[in-house]
Length: 230
Image (cartoon, rainbow, N blue to C red; front, side, top):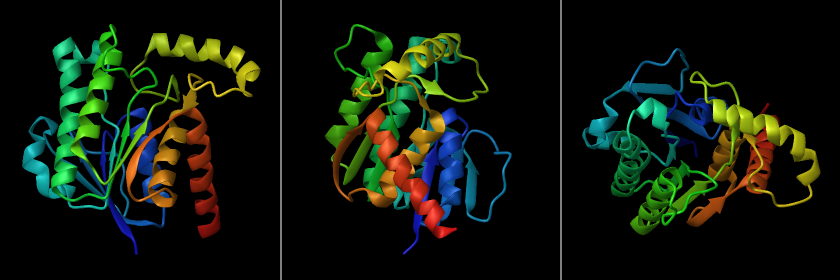
């Protein structure tokens, strides 16, 4: 049986790659996107709804799908304040989880961060940790939390700190391949493939936290599935 997916955050680095992977997968016959603006893309499986994400509650009926892929996120610079950042990275993500639970969604897959910690003295890490904690408390049938470190890929918005971090890690990465160094940078497209791979070939229930090595495993499974269907 084919599935229906809902994607939030389709214009971001991971979200855009996730959209491509979902549309390329034979497992999904409908990929619904809730976005603040129109996408520059047409596809027979794509159902893009331009909505006000701040009023996501009004879009509750759009959550009648099998799987929800949540790639919502912003930066302090783009948000403009801590309150605005928390609204996107915490409030909207947690609301998406609640709407998914209400709609009896089977799988909720969300992008977080490697340094997520609800008790962290650092604001970014603390917000990520708090939203993870909130999602876990909901009791979703399957909750998969993806915790990448620095993300590689072409962004529309430049992030100098991330660019410098990626440059440094390209130098040291060959020395750490033999470890479980979850802080290694990873392509946003690999995280996206891992999300879709987990939804397709992973378990149907449970709570999972996935990091660098897990991305490689599930991205590989998704790649094999795509090759087999061609």
